[in-house]
Image (cartoon, rainbow, N blue to C red; front, side):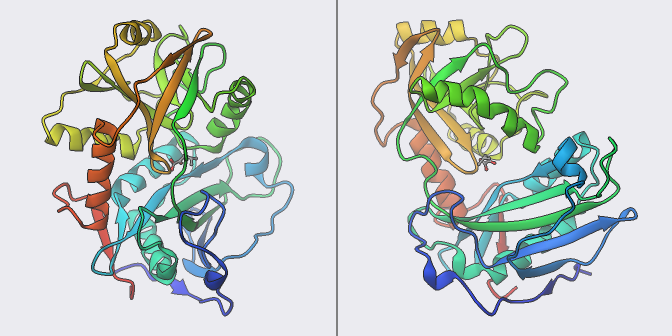
Length: 356
Ligand code: COI
């Protein structure tokens, strides 16, 4: 039996006040949110309610010790009017993997799926209909117990809200190879989508931005020599005509866009390599003109082209990009699968009726 989600609709929709055409990422929030609490070892009532502020004690554990995990996924309007929540199962698996790492309770699959289904059906009119837009969905769980002793929380709050989004970045990025600060260490939380990973990235990113760069290209915490991630995305390159990306590890997020692009590329018999990429190799590939593309891959940005990579004070320029570049062709195919213009032979789409 499907888990019941009680829906209370808002009487004051904000929809008519907003413009859904390419809004800045994170600037708009749709009318409703999903909410559910975990107490005494079990999940309670599941509800979709009008989006609202929450009140909490200053002693709330999440605020002090950072037990907070989130996901980011997207819902698309399909050509025939239904809604597609892209790769919902893989997002659910990754959510639970992050929750494990932070000692937080799993979210059962039927709770995750039914919550998202009800929320997107309730806010279906918020999904941009064209131009590559989507409804970005942000599930979060945080430790809600009000007690400031250092401990694993016994209580949690699970909320999902979202908002319409368009392009994340407007221009190709200038990035700086970061050799001093690290995003994640071996044995740490780098593979989990926990808030602390992002907080720790702000300072080095701000330093890079003060030097005129947009993002940092993170390197490994031991040698500061091997590429890990790019800002808050997976890093991908085209070197010698092959699609190359660092292998997954405990310091790299198992990116769902990364996985989708690799699978689409392999389906086209494009050679792909998941292997260590050293900064020395990148330098040589630039000098020998063997690197033709560099980009970030993530749910929010999908594909973020890189124009410049600064290595130890020297700016290396990627060649001018055109629509025939591999990253744009893969992005187009991914977009076509998500909106139904291309058949979903991978089984990635989760179709929801707007009346669900
Ligand atoms: C995403 O790409 O969806 C992310 O979660 C990265 C960022 C927007 C926090």
